[in-house]
Length: 465
Image 1 (cartoon, rainbow, N blue to C red):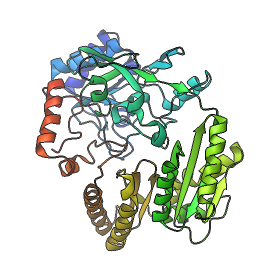
Image 2: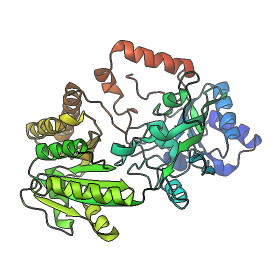
Image 3: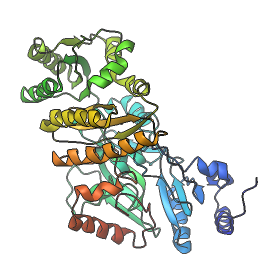
Image 4: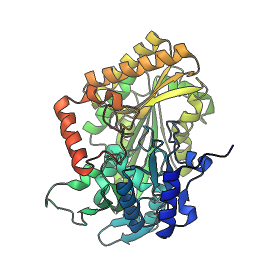
């Protein structure tokens, strides 16, 4: 059946074609629009239009036209977000920045990359590595997620324990406000305290304040060596104490990943090594840096835990390193065998609270009679909590929703936060006022209003509605 003509859509398309946009940059058919209305949360709402600008002048043109028509604008990268941050409305326009994918400059002297928002994270890492440089942020989606999406969500990843998250590497931005005016913030200077730190404000703002069109990223010298070890423990408490001991003994891992017993059981049969039956928690530890330092810290790690750990495997070469990482890489597909669906949250708690939050989530799992699988970043307290269920079963769906409410309550009671790296989007906005008080939220909303007075830029995200 032919879709009815939408006069507003037709009018906008006509204007954009007259302004120099190609037909390939304008997504107007129902089927094609649907492809731009989803993200990893599996929500899907068809926008009025999806537009694919190729340069910042076209971004400005779109914003000016949207302002004239009073239209909502929804910025979008690769659509790999986990919190509904780029989900549009039926009367909104998606602005997909994936065609703005140029690496504009690699400044080797100052160790800074200047890129457009559509650059793929993993591709940037490959390019700079060929120059002996290193871009550390490593979200799990780095093979397809864009730098712009990483910046607007302030994405993290396993290496955050040593290097920090995306925001720690953003030195400056150029962005367009909702009215089409351009702002610049930050620069290549190592120290810069001139005026408000608008760069940090835009990082993690989830596309609600401006559309970012250029990004300055700090680079580091590539580490000379990397060493990976796997440690198995009888309890989460033992593993948490091990993390604390590493840091106290001046071992500085770039990565400390953990798998709980549900995770271990899901992947155990696929591993090329045997874990002891009594293993409750596994740590995957990676140390990088100068070769001599990596070797000395790896030896210290072995000495510290050779008696305490049930199993300690230190990779001797790249092949063995890849074998150890299989435990983590096989996890997401493996837990799909537990139940057909999952509700995935990314809470974060202070390091000392990790054993208690895991223990309380295990009790909650028994209370609601649904498996809760936990894994993630033990070095920075960011835990991926997966409630496993069949969403087509109304009873399980109700119990799953009860679990999410309780998970957030437990997290906040322990001094934690609703999100360590995925953002709030529209999936957690209803819980936002559990973490922040009314004055704090009102202050954030005042900032939003200063940037976007009519709430047209990515509305419906972050704040409770």
